[in-house]
Image (cartoon, rainbow, N blue to C red; front, side, top):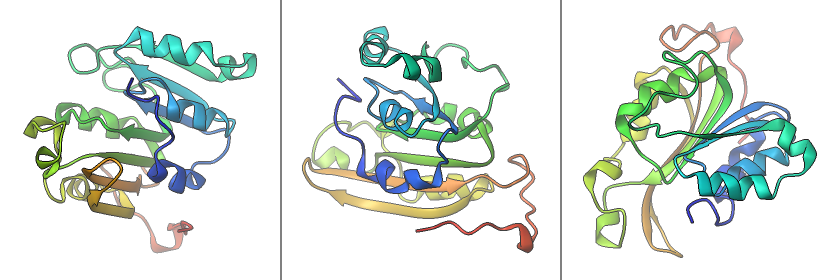
Length: 199
């Protein structure tokens, strides 16, 4: 089941940018590998997935304290309404997206990122059709696509990779980017207000 494997090394590497106790949205959470990872950081996590069985699996492993800090939301985010309002009425300090791509949802995702919120995104890209699934262009990022999305949206890119990984063989793009202090769309940031982000 998606989300039952170990924590993505990319997510683990950049988790230090997300403060303990922060609000985190785990998009297409599957069985909750990243939901559980951020619950261990004392975060408040909303996990959204289309599969109730995946959410039930997450629920079965939560402690009583984790239950208080975790919302499990069954929703078809591709065909149904966004579960946090339209436009989003709730924003999060961090968005985690792995192995998932639905381009029409991208503006909603970015609108759900709070000022100075952290986006950690990793999914398959062009080239993956030569080694396995997914192979449809709808589910594969084009060269530089994540980077271009971040730039157009006024996010500050902290790290970006686009290439080939093994075990298993796959082509991926991944990015870590931070929203401006003011709401996305107003990207003016005085130089003295720019934060330092540990690499």
